[in-house]
Length: 180
Ligand code: AMP
Image 1 (cartoon, rainbow, N blue to C red):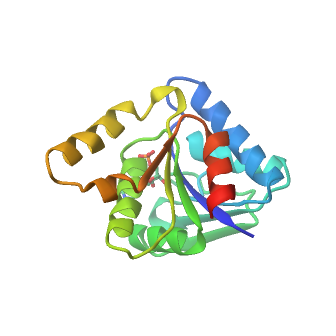
Image 2: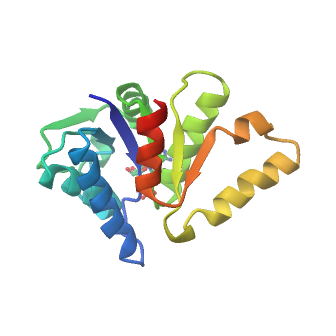
Protein backbone atom coordinates (compact mmCIF):
# COMPACT_ATOMS: atom_id res chain seq x y z
CA UNK A 1 0.00 0.00 0.00
CA UNK A 2 1.33 3.44 -0.93
CA UNK A 3 1.36 5.90 1.94
CA UNK A 4 1.16 9.67 1.98
CA UNK A 5 2.50 11.68 4.90
CA UNK A 6 0.30 14.70 5.56
CA UNK A 7 1.67 17.71 7.47
CA UNK A 8 -1.05 19.98 8.85
CA UNK A 9 -2.08 22.10 11.83
CA UNK A 10 -2.56 20.87 15.36
CA UNK A 11 -5.04 23.79 15.46
CA UNK A 12 -8.21 24.06 13.38
CA UNK A 13 -7.60 27.55 12.00
CA UNK A 14 -10.20 30.28 11.73
CA UNK A 15 -11.86 29.18 8.49
CA UNK A 16 -13.83 25.91 8.90
CA UNK A 17 -12.94 25.01 5.29
CA UNK A 18 -9.52 23.70 6.39
CA UNK A 19 -10.89 21.07 8.76
CA UNK A 20 -13.64 20.19 6.27
CA UNK A 21 -11.22 19.66 3.37
CA UNK A 22 -8.81 17.69 5.57
CA UNK A 23 -11.59 15.29 6.52
CA UNK A 24 -12.55 14.88 2.86
CA UNK A 25 -8.95 14.23 1.87
CA UNK A 26 -8.91 11.51 4.54
CA UNK A 27 -12.11 10.03 3.00
CA UNK A 28 -10.58 10.10 -0.48
CA UNK A 29 -7.30 8.49 0.60
CA UNK A 30 -9.25 5.65 2.21
CA UNK A 31 -11.32 5.12 -0.96
CA UNK A 32 -8.18 5.06 -3.09
CA UNK A 33 -6.43 2.71 -0.65
CA UNK A 34 -3.68 5.19 0.10
CA UNK A 35 -2.40 4.95 3.68
CA UNK A 36 -2.16 8.07 5.84
CA UNK A 37 0.95 8.83 7.86
CA UNK A 38 0.70 11.85 10.19
CA UNK A 39 1.66 13.23 13.59
CA UNK A 40 -0.80 11.17 15.62
CA UNK A 41 -2.88 13.95 17.21
CA UNK A 42 -6.67 13.93 17.64
CA UNK A 43 -7.06 17.70 17.46
CA UNK A 44 -7.14 20.41 14.78
CA UNK A 45 -6.62 19.72 11.09
CA UNK A 46 -4.52 16.69 12.11
CA UNK A 47 -7.43 15.05 13.94
CA UNK A 48 -9.79 15.82 11.05
CA UNK A 49 -7.73 14.04 8.41
CA UNK A 50 -7.24 10.97 10.61
CA UNK A 51 -10.97 10.82 11.42
CA UNK A 52 -11.86 11.22 7.74
CA UNK A 53 -9.55 8.41 6.70
CA UNK A 54 -10.76 6.04 9.43
CA UNK A 55 -14.48 6.74 8.94
CA UNK A 56 -14.07 5.60 5.31
CA UNK A 57 -12.24 2.44 6.35
CA UNK A 58 -8.70 3.67 5.60
CA UNK A 59 -5.42 2.82 7.25
CA UNK A 60 -3.64 5.40 9.41
CA UNK A 61 -0.19 5.48 10.98
CA UNK A 62 0.33 8.11 13.71
CA UNK A 63 3.78 8.96 15.05
CA UNK A 64 3.99 11.16 18.15
CA UNK A 65 6.80 12.03 20.58
CA UNK A 66 6.22 10.97 24.20
CA UNK A 67 6.62 14.53 25.53
CA UNK A 68 3.68 15.79 23.48
CA UNK A 69 1.23 12.87 23.61
CA UNK A 70 -0.90 14.67 26.19
CA UNK A 71 -0.28 18.14 24.75
CA UNK A 72 -1.54 17.21 21.31
CA UNK A 73 -4.00 14.64 22.65
CA UNK A 74 -2.70 11.41 21.06
CA UNK A 75 -5.47 9.91 18.90
CA UNK A 76 -6.91 6.97 20.84
CA UNK A 77 -8.83 5.58 17.86
CA UNK A 78 -5.72 4.73 15.83
CA UNK A 79 -4.80 1.16 15.05
CA UNK A 80 -1.16 2.20 14.66
CA UNK A 81 0.04 4.91 17.05
CA UNK A 82 3.80 4.91 17.54
CA UNK A 83 4.99 6.84 20.59
CA UNK A 84 8.62 7.78 19.92
CA UNK A 85 11.44 9.33 21.92
CA UNK A 86 11.54 12.85 20.47
CA UNK A 87 10.58 15.17 17.62
CA UNK A 88 13.57 14.18 15.46
CA UNK A 89 12.68 10.50 15.69
CA UNK A 90 9.07 11.35 14.85
CA UNK A 91 10.00 13.22 11.72
CA UNK A 92 12.50 10.61 10.52
CA UNK A 93 9.95 7.83 11.11
CA UNK A 94 7.15 9.69 9.28
CA UNK A 95 9.45 10.29 6.30
CA UNK A 96 10.65 6.68 6.25
CA UNK A 97 7.09 5.26 6.26
CA UNK A 98 5.83 7.43 3.39
CA UNK A 99 5.94 7.59 -0.41
CA UNK A 100 5.00 11.27 -0.72
CA UNK A 101 4.47 14.39 1.41
CA UNK A 102 1.42 16.68 1.40
CA UNK A 103 1.24 19.98 3.29
CA UNK A 104 -2.23 21.20 4.26
CA UNK A 105 -2.88 24.43 6.17
CA UNK A 106 -1.12 24.60 9.52
CA UNK A 107 1.33 26.62 11.59
CA UNK A 108 5.07 26.70 12.24
CA UNK A 109 5.27 22.93 12.84
CA UNK A 110 3.69 22.29 9.45
CA UNK A 111 6.08 24.74 7.74
CA UNK A 112 9.05 23.20 9.50
CA UNK A 113 8.10 19.72 8.34
CA UNK A 114 7.42 20.86 4.78
CA UNK A 115 10.69 22.81 4.52
CA UNK A 116 12.62 19.91 5.99
CA UNK A 117 11.39 17.38 3.42
CA UNK A 118 12.14 19.87 0.62
CA UNK A 119 15.65 20.39 2.06
CA UNK A 120 16.18 16.63 2.18
CA UNK A 121 14.97 16.35 -1.43
CA UNK A 122 17.46 19.07 -2.47
CA UNK A 123 20.22 17.01 -0.89
CA UNK A 124 18.89 13.84 -2.56
CA UNK A 125 18.31 12.13 0.80
CA UNK A 126 15.04 11.04 -0.80
CA UNK A 127 13.23 11.32 -4.12
CA UNK A 128 9.70 11.44 -2.78
CA UNK A 129 7.41 14.16 -4.13
CA UNK A 130 6.55 17.16 -1.93
CA UNK A 131 3.09 18.65 -2.51
CA UNK A 132 1.69 21.94 -1.25
CA UNK A 133 -2.12 21.82 -1.21
CA UNK A 134 -2.94 25.48 -1.58
CA UNK A 135 -6.54 25.40 -0.30
CA UNK A 136 -8.16 28.81 -0.82
CA UNK A 137 -4.73 30.37 -1.41
CA UNK A 138 -3.59 29.58 2.15
CA UNK A 139 0.03 29.05 1.02
CA UNK A 140 0.21 32.01 -1.40
CA UNK A 141 2.63 33.95 0.85
CA UNK A 142 4.93 31.00 1.41
CA UNK A 143 4.96 30.08 -2.29
CA UNK A 144 5.73 33.72 -3.13
CA UNK A 145 8.63 33.59 -0.68
CA UNK A 146 9.96 30.42 -2.32
CA UNK A 147 9.92 32.28 -5.67
CA UNK A 148 11.60 35.29 -3.99
CA UNK A 149 14.51 33.23 -2.69
CA UNK A 150 14.80 31.68 -6.15
CA UNK A 151 14.96 35.14 -7.77
CA UNK A 152 17.51 36.25 -5.17
CA UNK A 153 19.82 33.35 -6.02
CA UNK A 154 19.35 31.22 -2.91
CA UNK A 155 17.29 28.45 -4.50
CA UNK A 156 17.95 26.97 -7.94
CA UNK A 157 15.21 26.55 -10.54
CA UNK A 158 15.68 22.82 -10.25
CA UNK A 159 15.12 22.88 -6.50
CA UNK A 160 12.18 25.30 -6.76
CA UNK A 161 10.66 22.69 -9.05
CA UNK A 162 10.72 20.17 -6.20
CA UNK A 163 7.69 21.96 -4.72
CA UNK A 164 4.60 20.58 -6.43
CA UNK A 165 1.83 23.07 -5.94
CA UNK A 166 -1.87 22.30 -6.47
CA UNK A 167 -4.99 24.28 -5.54
CA UNK A 168 -6.92 21.14 -4.54
CA UNK A 169 -6.08 17.83 -2.91
CA UNK A 170 -7.93 15.98 -5.69
CA UNK A 171 -5.45 17.28 -8.29
CA UNK A 172 -2.50 16.41 -6.08
CA UNK A 173 -3.77 12.86 -5.56
CA UNK A 174 -4.27 12.46 -9.33
CA UNK A 175 -0.72 13.70 -9.97
CA UNK A 176 0.66 11.29 -7.38
CA UNK A 177 -1.32 8.36 -8.80
CA UNK A 178 -0.23 9.01 -12.38
CA UNK A 179 3.44 9.78 -11.74
CA UNK A 180 4.58 7.70 -8.74
P1 AMP B 1 1.50 23.25 13.84
O1 AMP B 1 1.42 23.40 12.37
O2 AMP B 1 2.41 24.25 14.49
O3 AMP B 1 0.16 23.18 14.51
O4 AMP B 1 2.19 21.85 14.12
C1 AMP B 1 1.85 20.73 13.38
C2 AMP B 1 2.65 19.58 13.86
O5 AMP B 1 4.05 19.88 13.81
C3 AMP B 1 2.35 19.19 15.30
O6 AMP B 1 2.28 17.79 15.35
C4 AMP B 1 3.56 19.66 16.06
O7 AMP B 1 3.89 18.80 17.11
C5 AMP B 1 4.65 19.60 15.04
N1 AMP B 1 5.66 20.60 15.34
C6 AMP B 1 5.53 21.74 16.02
N2 AMP B 1 6.71 22.38 16.11
C7 AMP B 1 7.61 21.62 15.48
C8 AMP B 1 9.00 21.72 15.22
N3 AMP B 1 9.74 22.73 15.63
N4 AMP B 1 9.58 20.72 14.52
C9 AMP B 1 8.83 19.71 14.08
N5 AMP B 1 7.54 19.55 14.27
C10 AMP B 1 6.93 20.48 14.98
